[in-house]
Image 1 (cartoon, rainbow, N blue to C red):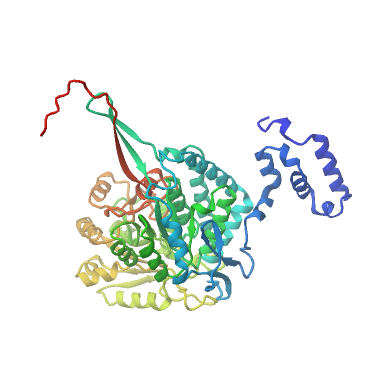
Image 2: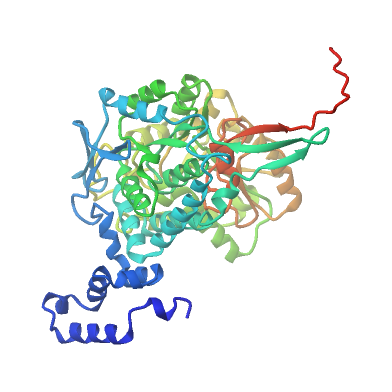
Length: 586
């Protein structure tokens, strides 16, 4: 009844069509089945009489062929081009992308060289500082992006499209199906959140009365205009998609660079966005090495650059771009387990969560659990360490619960462990070895889930020791230590001395203990309570660091406003001008 009978093909037409298909009286059509017959029916004119909903239901995954250009399950996935001036462009330079599981060539990326940058620079500079749209210019584009978001969300609900992106993520950044699927689903929910009027609500303004009749002030969220965003390999879809859309929603024109190892995912997603109504010339998509991207930024001078990645690169960009940056950089993320130990069933759950936080996707998350501060009640009086050791040992390459480490080699991990073991009373609790029986190329790491115990006294002994212990290893590795009630100030000292304040977890339902820790720490995304975790960047809360005016968030209304718009105040002073106003000079 919601679809409306008048918009559907008549029952007699459908029945005849299905009968002919079953009887095999239409040649190939009979062999291809009922779904293909309905597809052909709609293509031949039936679509004009069907609602968009019915078209989607009938066509199903067939509409995928109009935009998808690669096969995630093929040995060779495909190639990646660039987007300039609304066109897909290939360059002479082509980078080979190898399969992280076996080293075979699985894709080629056409990368821009220095001589190719003028097209990007010119296109970006055409965008005014007032943006492609703003609250006073082309507000229809807010509605357009609401519609685009709705269509993308509906597309990602299609099981075949959902599976397409899940498999593509697993190919280029090997992670378990659950991890890859979760990334697709979070992305879909983000688009659901902004399907409809929520895009325009991002730019909701406020007014305040003036000093006299005819005067009022209006505060507006204003785009930057030409902007850039640079995203890493570990979340090939979620991070670039959410940040790109935030930039577009607010009226900016972004140039997007994704790590070339995984950029084929975003290449395909841009095609879906375009298929769902996004004008392709709203975006620039560049594939290149880091030095070339740096040159592009120096030439184009975007009004704002969002960078997600390493702290060293973040600081370089902040300096070279004169502070016009938003950063979601490194995270050496802590978890503190309080004095209250729950039931054995709850301990088992918390151990499962600790294993997930430290070792899911082989620890390659900026929110991964880097250091675990265990109250002595947990460390000495429970089997918690044995529980996470047992869970870590179950991880395997077959289901990708452990996999290639794409930014750290085995030699670097082993060297770090050796250096840590020089500290007094430090020891390997489990792991510490490379994986066996695999074909992962040597340019990538292949390491067991590993935990090293370092006493808190050894950690805080001097600056050199502290720097060593808090060095981020972007792989399946964590530090574990313990503390007593009297040593809580030392734990808080360690948290204070850390330079990265992204995520944190406080596993405790002891309200007084919890409040003391929360009151004296500053991580931007902090989970508190017995179910607290360090990982997880869903679309329903802010995810980003704190303690830095350059800190960038992702996923929420507040994050989008903070990163992709600035405040503009317009004071309307319209009169009337009083007839007897004394025009006293001052």
